[in-house]
Image (cartoon, rainbow, N blue to C red):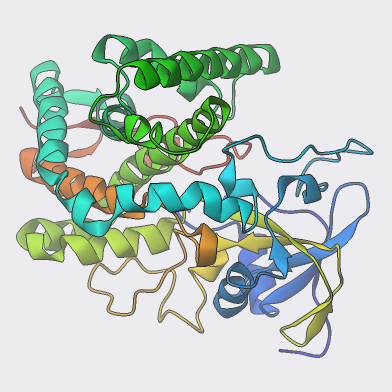
Length: 402
């Protein structure tokens, strides 16, 4: 790394025209200057931007960097002023450190093992086939987001939580409203409040009449109703939004890389590796925040106690020191180890479920519709607003030969 320290004054969010899969050019440029840059947060607070793979991974595994919500006083793009951030709500374990975090995560860990998630493969195949049947019947064109990408993970997470079938439509609409990044403040609060109210009723119902689902299993623990509601909300947000955007954006990427798509269609055994490469290449969960609890030496620099730190997953997963030709989608890539699911104690709990859903859904889609293609020019595909926490497409119009 050069002696001079690169400084970033605004966190870039806009993608380059014609490059919807690449991180913002300014972030890639920051990585070229070195894996760590100074960053000035809105309001003038000095902090750090970590863009290199090794340093991002190091921070994620280091307990000297905190995930606690009340320490996240500085947003990468919004000036909060003097507003105090409250601690995480009960059950909101993504924004806690150990031992509080461990208390919530431990009873969940056994529900999302590799073995248990693979046992769900047949159910994922059924749900996927049902939605592809509906697409084909209504075709030969569709918005892949609403017809395919959103409903598959939504149905799966609803079943895991034990949401009654008759409630799923309205429930999914409520959840989408506060995750799409475009809902107005009044509507967002209303949707969030309605979702919280529904989850409270659902927890009460599971306590009274447990069924075969994760939420019912958790009622047999020492977790309170409020804690169970918070956990359910975390599982919903993580289990629907990220996978839905991976399915839609991943399909978009495959359609823009026809040789890779053809290779996957010709060799279904490539599916596992293809999923890992798409996760690395797209990195839909773009950035995360941490706060230094003490002075930490990192990349030859001293991160001062109390400093906010932005971790750029998208550039870490495109780091040329870790991945050869990082900006190329290569489904044959051998060296995995991407950070799309994070690392350390907060590594994504539902990653095995997401892998099953993507492996099944991508293969089923491209085999059902061998002539699948975009219905509009690629540069007209509508991307999610950068205010959304998870990157993706708002809609993906596709067509195929009937």
